[in-house]
Image (cartoon, rainbow, N blue to C red):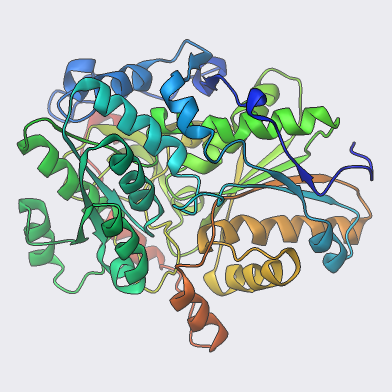
Length: 462
């Protein structure tokens, strides 16, 4: 248990920047089921994936045995511009809550993209440049991933097309402007620039879009353009691998002061930041060295873990990706446009889905007025305006700290502060003006998505 001598901010030196990413799959007792080719229903091979993804990323995606994968020197040099990031003891929040709990957060908003997404964007663009590609396509929800990728593409000299979820592009024009400043071409999705987009618009003309829609459009462009590949900011195993630098730095910082977290919390959309934060701590739990509790926090409006099905599903609305066994609401599920955060994805990382299914992790769904209440309270005492996504983790961290106040238990809580909310002021204004509403899909709403799950033998007994 930690002592009162812990500094407010724990900094690491450049020399302590991890030289290797950590591959959690190597320590999992049971691996997640393989991706399936949607035509043959056989496990995907490198040959299946390389028309869409860079070769080095495909190799990382399929690697389930190597615990540590070296971070190339070129990526480490870029990381040094903003890493290591600080681990902060939330003394003011503890005081406000009157809790005996110790609360720590790993802050990933100290770069121009404003979030953790740059950790993987840099890696993916580096490998694309190494392969001789000239352009990339991607999707973005709240805009953090698109911004991070635009920064990385500008640095390495690659062109970029970003399909941005339409409702987010409307809510966050300044986020769009930042991407354009870095040279990206930003298209609200669904759009009429792709066959997938036109089909979705024909079926749902008033839709605000979803990450599944945007992924379909971005992949379609990548498949039809020379020297172009698609890159994804969450969900896939290689993205969680890159984001493990968050957890590795957190563990190094905590170990320096003998801090052992009892509860580790992260927001969960596709799973990248949560998977990265928990990775080395989860390894300790899997190997019997820790009994820490892990909590994934998702929006009640898009509750893939808490109300989804553990099934094989497409990763996109257009049904072009490999099939992944994950907790899903169905690739045709359309989340409410009123939801303010970027956690609008119908599925969850196969790694996190497997850990949750096997009982290593729990999940909670929270409504958005509750998370904005937590966000404003956090901002007023800790001085950082959090992104709505991050506020999901803040909400549950505060709830757990309040439980400690009620029981008198002194627990150590760690949560991921994934980014800043300075481009989310439309949502903050909606909350502060009392206009924000909560949307929770009915069972009938969810059933529409479940009815569209692939009709394959592996899904017969879900």
